[in-house]
Image 1 (cartoon, rainbow, N blue to C red):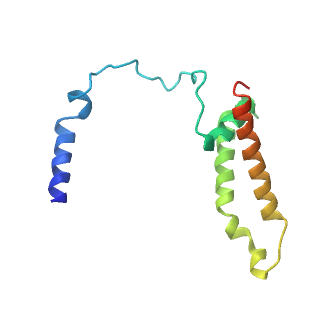
Image 2 (tube, rainbow, N blue to C red):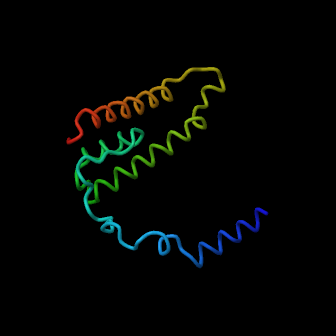
Image 3 (cartoon, helix red, strand yellow):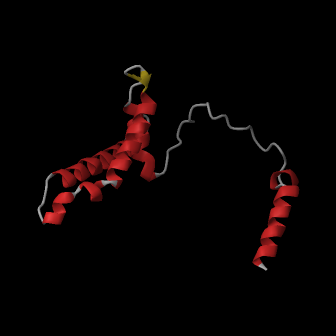
Length: 124
């Protein structure tokens, strides 16, 4: 029964596309990916720190686009945080080391500060 419903749904999706049957072709203007973000639009709270940090990045860093470097930095930071359990070898010897908690505190402070800046000063 599931297979037959899936085949029927696939048939309907291929031969009767949703937008050409039920929705008029043009409801509004098509969005352009190159237009700037309209004023007043904010991201969700869990992306606010990145959104706000991008406002403080200069346009060019060492001859490269500053926004691209910032996004690569955020990606590298996320990768670094995912690898924390693998480079915390001191916990195997039941020793506390200052590096992993310090990195965590710095990242947490960065996220909290820039999130609050994004909500308190949305235009800056």
